[in-house]
Amino acid sequence: MVLRSAFEDFQSSTLSAVPGLLGKLRYLVLLHNGDGSYSHWGLERVYGSGAAEKAMRTSHGILVSGILRTPLSELAEDLKGSATGAQITELEFLSCLETPQANALPAQRFQASEKHFRSVLHSLFALVQNRARATPRDASPLPPLAR
Image 1 (cartoon, rainbow, N blue to C red):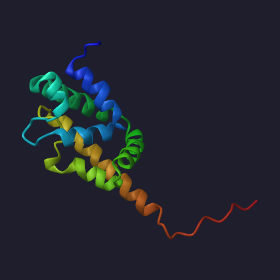
Image 2 (image 1 turned 60 degrees about the vertical axis):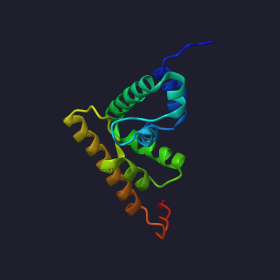
Image 3 (image 1 turned 30 degrees about the horizontal axis):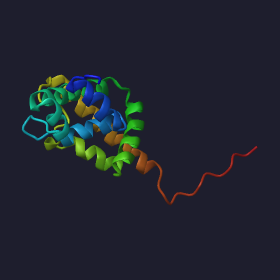
Image 4 (image 1 turned 45 degrees about the horizontal axis):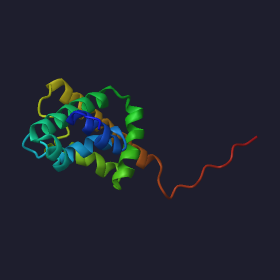
């Protein structure tokens, strides 16, 4: 029997099953109770509420740091896969993360990180909206190149 910490278990068993960085963030947002605490029945049952809480809070901080270090082009691709995995549109997915109630950022954060995170979400929104406007569904296909 392999003994793992709550953090190792949460990282390797739970979060690893969720596709994409942004998908993992959305999952943590769903586990966040809105009062600064997290709830995961299985993790709490195995490791106790304190250890489970610490594992999820630590994972949340690490994940947000990773997102802030990821190039925007990679996050745009990640968004596509994460939204597809959640079976919602990219705009709906981003809306889940941007509302003040979403708790997309861990409770202990720095103001600069929060501004950086908000700017990343804003940029992703702009990319998705511009991509939608740039490729209208009823547009005629481009003519073949002349030789």
